[in-house]
Image 1 (cartoon, rainbow, N blue to C red):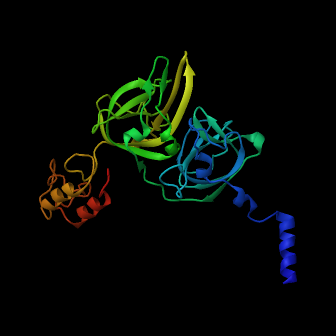
Image 2: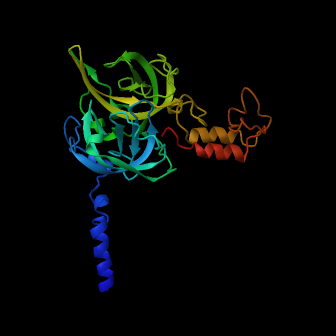
Length: 325
């Protein structure tokens, strides 16, 4: 027993208190959660250690940004961006799917969004804790939960900041269309209006989209319908030419963020439910499926056609069950 105690004392003397850094490190939730009316993090200006999360997106460019997801908080306050503040290539070895933790990063609310700023003067570091972690599905939110700002005499302002809980998170709005383009401080925002309730709309932007063509993704045209648009939510505040901006924007990251037609949605209402299953069942075991109808679209494995609606199609249907709900 005395020998064991002596060994522990030697280890602590050499390495310091075991687990101290992990115990004092903050979760994404603890950094993002706030009751501030403007959405500012209570850790703003502090240099902290962060237990981090799974990288769901890595931006290109000189000052790389990592979008991190904490699976312990999938419904709110579970996302944040880490930024290579001076573009020193700090995150070159980090890949999507890695769980990354940090030491000595500065929490900064910059332009409205809370970042973990990787600044050399703070002697920061990061650890790839694990790799190839499963990525989350986007959290479905209603359009009004990330509502567009309202235009005033000299401002575009959101009515409140209740969308703050989704900042940095991968989310999705359902059954919307592009109402208009050319909004925001950089004129790169477009309005997504609900097809269900025309009084509800949010703003989106493609500036972080790897597949954009110019200012917008090629899919973005006025009148274009989407069963779903996913992306990372960002708060943005700025002042330009005497106009003040404070709004939330849904940042798409690739073509896969846009769902025009929902697979297995036979009644085209942007969800897969019992109505669609009834249609599928009506074509069960039907053969001779080919272009253009594919047995009422029930032959879901037409990319590997066998000309019949069978168990392979049922498995494909099950994969999309309740999507859009």
